[in-house]
Each structure stands twice: as C-alpha cells, then as structure tokens.
Length: 491
Image (cartoon, rainbow, N blue to C red; front, top):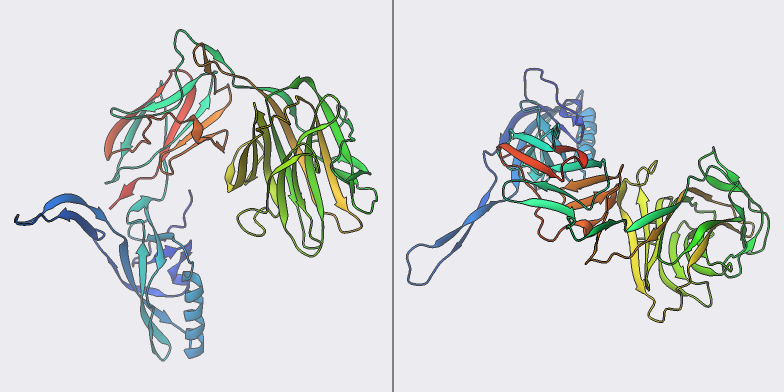
C-alpha cells in the first residue's frame, strides 16, 4: 500500500488524496482531538441511583485545519480557491497524512461549510475533515513470514490490528488453519483416521488457447445463429476472430474440442474478453455438448444494441426454444459488464446448476477477482438437462453488417466434480500450488484469488492482533508457506 508522504520542511503541512496542500495553500493551525467522540451505553433503573454502564464506543474523528491561500492578485486567488474545491470534493474517504506524523494515515472526507474570508489577495478558512473510521493507520504494512509454521507478531499500535494471512500450499491437504491462544480460523476440515482424502474436483482439460490443433470446426450453434469465417490464434496465448464471414443475422466462427471422457458432474471455467462499443454488436458463447453434439448448457456474454453499449450475460440449460434460460442480466446497473474481462463459469452437480460472471482486475492466472460479479443457482427439478458433457465449443458472433467488437478466449479449464462420502472420505480442498488468503479486516476468504466463504469452518473467528507481542500457529505443520501482513492502528 503506497502513500504520498508530506516532506518535512519545518512547518506543518499535509497530503490529501496524494496531493500536498502546498500546491494550493499554507496550514496555519490544525486541531486534532486526542480521542474521538465516545458514546456511553448505559441503562437507568427506576428508583435506583445512577445507572448501569455497559461500556462505550468511538464515534467519528473530527480534524480541523486552518489554511491561508495567497494569490498573485484577486483573480489568481479565486482560481486557487476553485482548484482547492476540486481537490477536496472527493465524495468519499481519502488518505490524509500530516507532516508531523508521516508514518500514520487517516481516511477522511470534507464535511460542513467551508467559508473563505478574503482580504484582497489573501484568503483564510477552515477545512473540516471527518474520519468515519476514527483510527490512524500505518502508512506501511507490516509483513512477517512464518518460521516453522509460527508467526511471531509485534504490533506497535495502540489498538488491535486485523491481519491478512496468506498461504502458498506445498502439499495437498483437507484443511488450513491459523490459531491463536483463544481463537482460530480454519478452512476445510481435518481428516480422521477413518477417512480417506478425495479430491472434490479433478482437472480434465487445461487449454491455454495457444494452439488450434486439438480443435475442430464447431457446428452446434444456438437458435438462428450461423457459422462463417474462422478463428485465429492471438500471440500463442488466446483465441480470437480471423474472420466473421457474412450473414444477415448472427454469424461467425465456431470451434470445438472433445474431452477424454464424458463427465456427469462438471465445472467449466473460461477466461475471456468481450470489449463492446456503442456502435458495435456481437457475442461470445461457450457451449457444452453431449456425445451426440446436442447442447447441454451454455454461457454467453454479448452486446445486442446497435446504438448503445450494454453487455448482457446469460446462462442456459439446453438450447434456445427448448431449454431453460435460468439467468440473464446486464448487472447491477446499465453498463455493469461493459468491456468485460474476466471469468465465466458454468457448473452442474446432480440437478443443481450454477453460473458465475466475474470481472477481474488481472487474470494472468486464475484469481484476482474483484467485486463486479453476478451469479445464480438453479435446480433442474425435472432432471431434463442431465446428459454428460463430452465436448466444449466456442462461438464468436457478429450481427449482420454492424461493426464488430473484441471477442477473445484466453483460457479454458474443465473439472470433473466428485461425490464425497462424509463417513469414509474428507474433501482434499487444497492442492500443491494453491494460494489461500484469510482477510480478517474484511472477513473474507479467497482461494486462488476467488472468494470462497463456503470453505470457512463454522467455529472460526476472524483474528485480531492485540497491541504488543502475540503469536499465530499455522496447522497442519509443513503444509504451506505463510506470511501475515497488517496495518497498525492508533487512537
């Protein structure tokens, strides 16, 4: 985590949102309270003197900064005042750092009236900052590596800190836990002597989309779509479109690849890009086929509006007309999935289907998922769409003669999902090379960058690090290389 730190030059100044106040004004005084407002929780009992005190809680912290603004003339002064207004009007909390404590950062926003008193080319006023989170944080994270699966912690702050525990798995295992003296956080479950480990999923196809040789021309497109043109390799690490060909409706190339064996319960993960425009139209579909080439299920990301940019995501069991479209959305707001770059997933276990569409900040490897996502579970109560999948098809579509958009597939992984008998088996949820992240500040679990809260044991408590010295033990021993990072906090 990087911050712009004010330089020590003999008098107080500050940076806000990475900008030093010296670009615009001079600090004449700063009022920082010793403690944020404390609200007591107490109950008064009739006919009993006094009250019962149940502790208190910290409110927001207020910081007032008196400033002087000097202009070359009155016009220049007004220009600086407007520049300061633009700088400080963030609409959200931003980092605030003072030069007399360059190792500490507050997260603040401007509040209340900001009146400027003007004397010819001099302006004076008070900036009123509110810190909704009343604590100061260290500008640098403390990072500690585990030694022999023990993390020795020194928290120099005055308040508990919330760690991020990151482990890189060395050997397969059924659980991973971080333990303190009075609490723990555990992912998965230990394996008893009466249980055998079993992989809940097995990777059966791992295609980095750098070689078209294992693929053949597809033919099972959906609805009235037609096949034309050809697929191209892009830099030996992606598939995109060489030509869409021609057609009056949706048209474009399709390729398919067979699996080694048909799979009943499956998970298909695809990294792809659908970069739409206001003028262009198009869609990218991942189609799952049975041994006879019939459509079992499909995922689509597409823009169907000629004069607007609006990526829509869709998941289906079967094909259009005879199947079930169990999910279709443009997201939480219009344009939510525009410029899509991320992970799309379709899985089926028994008669339960699940689809996921997740934007990703960086997908050089599977992971680094951000919060722009949408998903849906659906139960096929009639068991009408339960054929095993045997082939994976990619379809790149354009519409009539409208401008095309960028459609690209970067990686495809197909997993076989296994049943786990709880009496005799324990799911081996971690494999060598996996990464796990326990974010105690956000109460979040990630595996290989993907949020997976279902891994969390119900008895777990997200850890906090008290001021002073403490210790975290990692179990089972020898399973992972672990580091712990945290921001120290002060009142």
